[in-house]
Image (cartoon, rainbow, N blue to C red; front, side, top):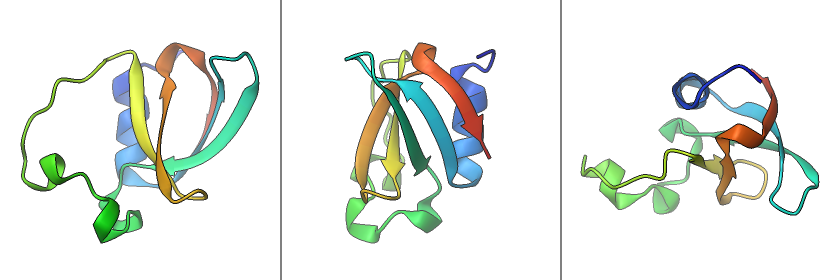
Length: 85
């Protein structure tokens, strides 16, 4: 996969996308996810982002909202196999 973290994040900010990645245990997973606040329930929005506060981030990992499980999940950027927008 030739996309970098910023490219993936831009897609996530715009819409719900399907990300296929290899989990830490070696299995493959498909996840419908987003960072677009329109799709995240009010009580699930991170307060630091709502307030505009900066938080230290691990740049190897992307934290996303899983729209199927209705909860926050993460994946390693280097383990992304495919993205469908």
